[in-house]
Image 1 (cartoon, rainbow, N blue to C red):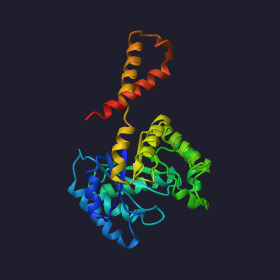
Image 2: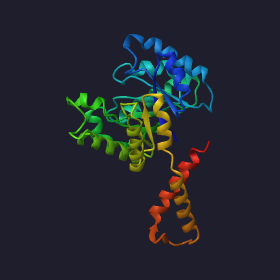
Image 3: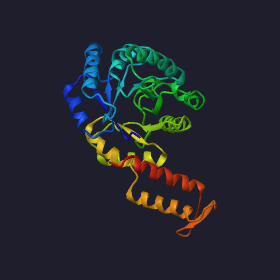
Image 4: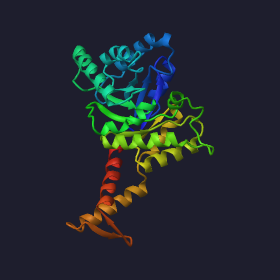
Length: 293
């Protein structure tokens, strides 16, 4: 499970080096928004060089690449970088799972071209950057995309697509449209049995706001978060790992059911708990075990 996904401009050697030292679970080498169009050929070469220098099945952090939209330079990006075997591609401006299936077919051919294991390059869809994308999120529950590993949402591109002047409500939180997109993305990811990844926090200097957002995201069901600066990584890694108190409680829940086999409801601390509590406890323990160093 990947908690922290750190964006790094693919054409900056300095930022690539800092990203690798950040402690992020995954780096996203960005060929889209943070790279000028004139620099993309150079950036593609830098991505290939970076991947070659960090090759290996036990690569940590994982290295993903954000390509450009599929109706733009996305295929050119994929054709250039897949030969270096990234862990996955981050795909922006996706309108629905059918577009990811088309990309998956392209990747089948590219992997065959380069002698790579079939299906090895995974996909993370940025699934809420257009109005159509938000309205079609339910399709991820019906259209299987074998390479799909995660869905995330974004609150920065959608306002532009809608012609909105802001993504905030009068109190400074997300306006209803963007809260709806976030919830729908979470539901779509869980329905598709992939990781739901929460969006970025723009102010990388506001550690308190980041930690609050991580706590809220994990409580809602998100399992990771986008980072735009190395300073955000530690808070995200901590925020998306169960606390010691949660782990201790989960062990007590599991032990209570183990002591009463064949019973669907048991008492714990004066409260009755049932099978949903057991499943949640098991998820907590599985998440904790996944992050043991």
